[in-house]
Image 1 (cartoon, helix red, strand yellow):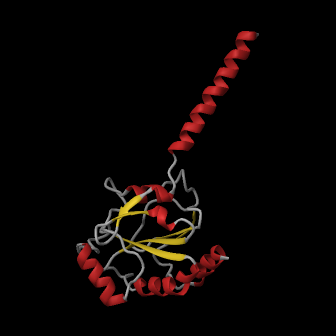
Image 2 (image 1 turned 135 degrees about the vertical axis):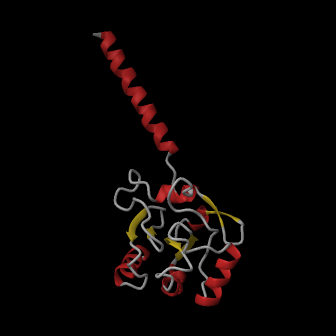
Image 3 (image 1 turned 180 degrees about the horizontal axis):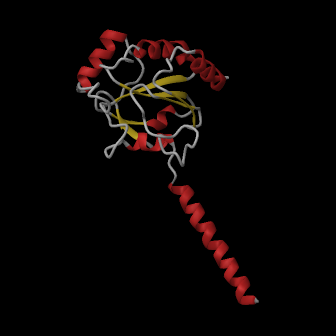
Length: 187
């Protein structure tokens, strides 16, 4: 009987250690470092406490016009603690063929983009960037995870770094569903 109790206690201790070790390995959005469009290292921790809309963008896509609406959304809510983060990606039919300097020039001249833009990354496949591996992980984010389906997929992140919503490519940043969710988080 005593051996069985010691065995059970030992088993419970082992399970507790395994579970707590797993929790320590879990990343948050703020654990990631990325390169900005100019090649400078940026810790996403600098965005802690802000509401974020993380978007994979492309310059030669049928949805590229969404840059204008992303900029308008950024301008509307930036003073309240909202930031759009743009991540150029060339994963869909070569619709972001330019280098970072070309992308920056295009965004600035064509759409007046002033929200933070980052260096070109991969958002799916074997070379997926760790940030997008995290964002699309179905185990970590059962409601919002899953493969990026096209350019201009949008992840809405609350002030604590939790992904709270995902909007498909066809959901324009100017749609009421997007602004209502942002306003809800900013309250």
